View 1: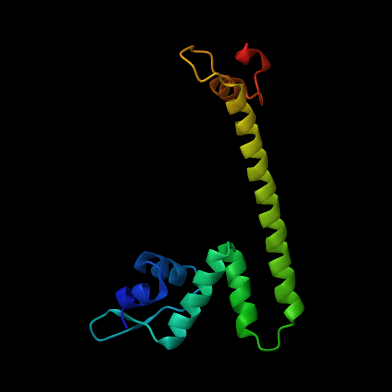
View 2: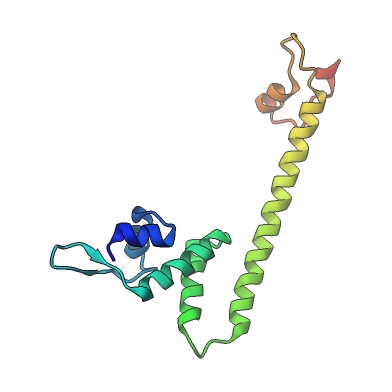
Amino acid sequence: MNIGQAAKHSGLSAKMIRYYESIGLLQPAGRGDNGYRHYGAQDLHRLAFIKRARDLGFALEEVGKLLQLWQDRQRASADVKALALAHIDELNRKIAELASLRDTLGELVAHCQGDERPDCPILKSLETGAAACATCSE
C-alpha cells in the first residue's frame, strides 16, 4: 500500500510517517516502479505500535527504546517495566504541575471581581509574577 493508504490505515499522517522514517523509528519504505513508497503488513504493525506508544505519551526517544525492546526476543521484561515506570513518574510530575497551575489560576479567578472596574488580579499576577494579589479584590 502507498503512504496515503498507510496513513489512513494507521491513523497517522503521511507527514508523520515520513518523519518516523527520517529519524529511524521506521525503516525506509521500499519504492515501487513509480517511485512511490510501498508499505507492508510489518510496517503497518510497527506504525500501530509507534502510534499507541505516542498516544500513551512516550517521547520519541522512549518509543525508540520500546521498539528495540519489542524486537529483542531476549529482552528482560524488567527493562520494559522500568521504562514504563519512569514514564509514569514523569506523567505524575506533569499532573502535579498542571494541578498546581489550575489551583493558582483558580485562586486568581476567585479574587477577580469580574465587574466593570479595570483592576484585575489575573493581569496583575501576569505582570508581576505574583501568585495572587490580595489587595486587588478590595
